[in-house]
Amino acid sequence: MSGTVLVIGSGGREHALGWKLSQSPRVSKVYHAPGNGGTSENVAIKHNDVDGLVRFAKKIGKDCLAVVGPEESLSLGVVDAFSKEGLRIFGPIKKAAMLEASKVFAKEFMKSANIPTAAFATFSDADKAKDYIKRQDRPLVVKADGLAAGKGVIVCDSAAQALDAVGKIMVGKEFGQAGASVVVEERLSGEEASFIALCDGRTIMPLASSQDHKRIFDGDRGPNTGGMGAYSPAPVVDSDLHDKIVKRVMQPVLRKMQERGTPFVGFLYAGIMVDEKTGEPSVLEFNARMGDPECQPIMMRMKSDLYEYMQAAIDGRLDSMPPIEWHDQTAVCVVMASRGYPGSYKKGEVIEGLDSDFGPGTMVFHAGTARDAQGRVVTAGGRVLGVTALGADARHAIDSAYSAVRKIRWGENGHYYRTDIARRAIR
Ligand code: AMP
Ligand code: GLY
Image 1 (cartoon, rainbow, N blue to C red):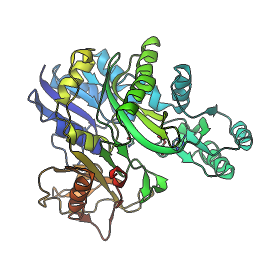
Image 2 (image 1 turned 30 degrees about the horizontal axis):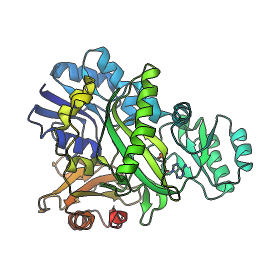
Image 3 (image 1 turned 30 degrees about the vertical axis):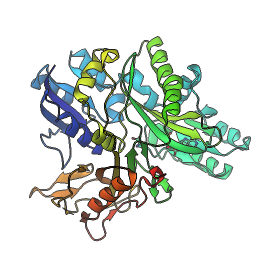
């Protein structure tokens, strides 16, 4: 099979997916809808304009493979809409993407499939949630049910903080309708890892392990963000843990989804906590898509042809494909953000240094960037760039990524990045 690709979305993840797919000898052209300042062949259709995306895909023809980046497109049913028109698209249908779109659904699903996860209760009534919290004597986490760009999870140190979180989410409606229900769960401790696999409904094809850094400040302090950096592989995922995650988490998800008549096709992402005492994995969350920024280091390490694997997944023949091959090197992605993110920040600053010589093995993936009237690349979002480098080991990859980061700047002290990305990977 060969043809064009339409990458839906505009972040660093989508830039990396398009970059990787464009290297396939079977891909003639990659379109980005809407893309960003670093992607070419952009078409001005937003990721949530499902009808517009369908119309465009129809126009470019049946040999087009659409690839979905953002969760919002999935939860709006973009895969269902494409499939109805006989168009090829890689991603889960809306009912399967509920694993990410509703945390209440995901927790109930895990319970029914016996997948290890933190003990929990769900509420659609703020007073009942508060009564429950007052009766707990363990540290808790409060999560808005719906999509909140990675910001709807509040990890609490005290009951007072948990009560306050319920107030903000359910009464103050900080995340709108996404906070109509909440999950209150036991707070786990340990090391986190992201486990992502390509799925065709029946078979899982694991990708390389990775780990991201969700908090804004060094040392994992401050509020959660969409992700401030990532690296692959994650040393915490050894082969024993890998097998446990496949058997206890990924396979049960596929079996249960099949039983429900909503087979999961696409990237399945399990956010895992490895218990600090027992070393056993539990699921913190599911995403129904690639991680961002995990995607950037994973794509840099992937040797196999991603396009062929996506086509095989859509046709339900992943079981006939060999395991994906990876570069042995470590890849590290440092996110350069607008100062102020995840709060408010300036936009429209001209980014300098993008034409520097970064050397081989380094890629500057764009996220919140755009082109101004003169064609200059300007900032247009909170997470602006994902500077990603390969190295013989974590130390070398870190050095290369940060030496590239230091060549880039904007505004007056307008950029911000964490200085400790992937330090945990140095053992
Ligand atoms: P989620 O979007 O559910 O992955 O939550 C975002 C982040 O919150 C996770 O990556 C963890 O760092 C943290 N988190 C979520 N659930 C828990 C939990 N039960 N215990 C401790 N930390 C958690
Ligand atoms: N990096 C976490 C996520 O993509 O949800």
